[in-house]
Length: 149
Image (cartoon, rainbow, N blue to C red; front, side, top):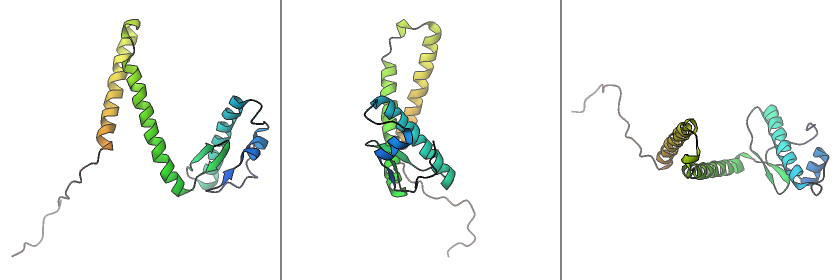
């Protein structure tokens, strides 16, 4: 896939018609195949941007087009994606807790218990960190040179 002719700068958008030309397929032919191909194109754009700018740049698919986010948009978008990922992790852990362990072999049961414990610990640490941390007072680590009279 040749992306050398594209203007890949922060804040630009690759429209759906241009994506169809790059992928050599139309959106209406096979929607699922087109969606997977768009994810591949998005990954190729992300890699090309990293090669050109030597840093990670946020790229997303929106309404069958690809958006290259500028720094302000990325600062708003990425924390939301992170929080969404935490929600997904919590739901997956909740589903894991409802697994019928009677249907598991003893070896699988041990691994299941380890996984539950590990995930519970990770989620607990994340909950503690997500709360507002109190600011600790600064303590001097050097002796005072002069004492007030």
